Image (cartoon, rainbow, N blue to C red):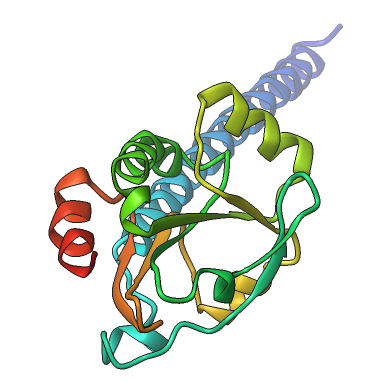
Length: 200
């Protein structure tokens, strides 16, 4: 083979290697970019979710104490029909929650303990589960030994009726049926004592 042909062959091989290397580095760059974008998106979504837990539903937050709680009727996991109006004249905590929601699960022992302490004072908790199946909810409640009434908002009607955009959200309703407090995010025992006990 002539020197000219050998040189051409070398150049072609060298160019082919350079081309393969270029594609390799380009693919690495694209993969790194996608990873960075994905992580950034997850962080942004997490920040949005975190921010949403501090938001208060505007529909009822503007005039606490002057807005009547809308009535609703839902089924319990055992199929019993229960309405908010069944507890007229009592102090009610309507708590919207789900089994997949960590702050919901974190606050439930506190809510249940407060309910057990004050149920003889005509205080009731209606734990309204958001769009989960009866067996899932029933197993969760039984496994944790919670004793307050639980309702199934399978179609999200109470979520919509009360303009709830984040879980957990709790509405504290006085004996006259007026919403006195809205808590978006985990509620503490100190808050329950400060808000509910004066209403009893």
